[in-house]
Length: 279
Image 1 (cartoon, helix red, strand yellow):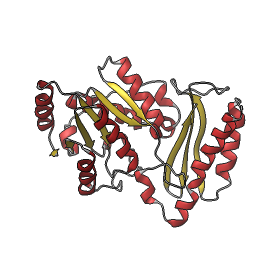
Image 2: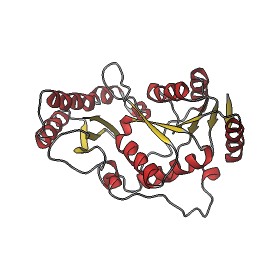
Image 3: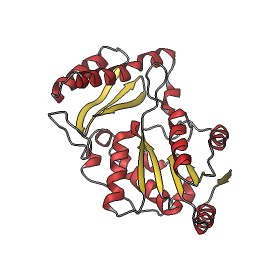
């Protein structure tokens, strides 16, 4: 397995692979990999001849008040996991490699990015779309893999690829959970023991909403109210949002029907966690 630190190295390697007629899969990550990332990598290895995993904590998707500096990093551990799963190339650039000092070109999106996480993190998806577009241009993958836990991000990237006529297949992979139900996240490491127990209220509210839908409830307001009440029963939880939206447009809906996304963002102490389910 190779670790590349420059765009030039990646382009040269991918060009050689493509000259051999090999397919290339890309798994974009910010590192500190867990079983959720591993599930994306396994799927990419299964689907493609060669796999690139990018490990880059992208500064442009963090607001000044967010956790850019404290975001967990461990390239050595990430590299061991990638190698064990069959990754062929890790792309691990410095911010200076990805963004020139006078960088001023952005990929932005309307509508889909204005709700849910986009409402409380207004610059976030501009940074995501820009860095993912850059990674697509650098790696030129046949397929790229993203987790359903970041459901709004997945919808936005799918729309970006469609709207900008990018010749890339976007593969969404299911949420991976801890044994007790908590969705896997690199930010779970921020939680102390008490907060870790309190964080279970996220998955409990998701499972409650899923149960209501399975039992025939289609009134979005009733499902949202029940999920909100469940979260509010935990003293350490502070709601950012509980929303039920159209799974394609990310706009609020009154009636639950396919495709619908029920998504939550909740602060446990200072840590912001997200979870969701899709109908």
